[in-house]
Image (spheres, rainbow, N blue to C red):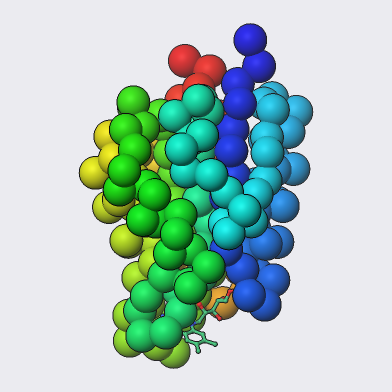
Length: 148
Ligand SMILES: Cc1cc2nc3c(=O)[nH]c(=O)nc-3n(C[C@H](O)[C@H](O)[C@H](O)COP(=O)(O)O)c2cc1C
């Protein structure tokens, strides 16, 4: 059966939205992918997915974006039942807590009994070629994990 991969993203100025779109393009031929902006995403539906990829920027002083807070709080309530997951995001090295939202989301998805299938990827602002290669590698790891 075609695997179902949910991509949830938070983006203010468009970088993480573009990364989410790129992931969808990478995965679309081999899976059913649904891309949802994080304030519209329902964390309680995630256990039904074969895999979840969360893409987020970091805001404030190393914190989650405001619009990601409800999703994050809901994650604390759920059992992901070993749903595969990966986390990545563009943020900025100009800030002390570079990509901290990626760390928080990774920790929480693990705590919620998800199965992390790729190392988390932090990108400094606009992705360069090496960053896109890391994004593609993450996508391939997720795909392989649901095809096994
Ligand atoms: C007010 C403000 C605070 C930010 N704080 C952080 C931060 O603490 N850590 C970090 O790594 N990036 C921080 N950033 C940088 C963004 O995460 C970065 O620009 C990211 O690429 C934006 O992604 P987007 O284009 O998807 O919105 C901050 C940006 C703004 C505007």
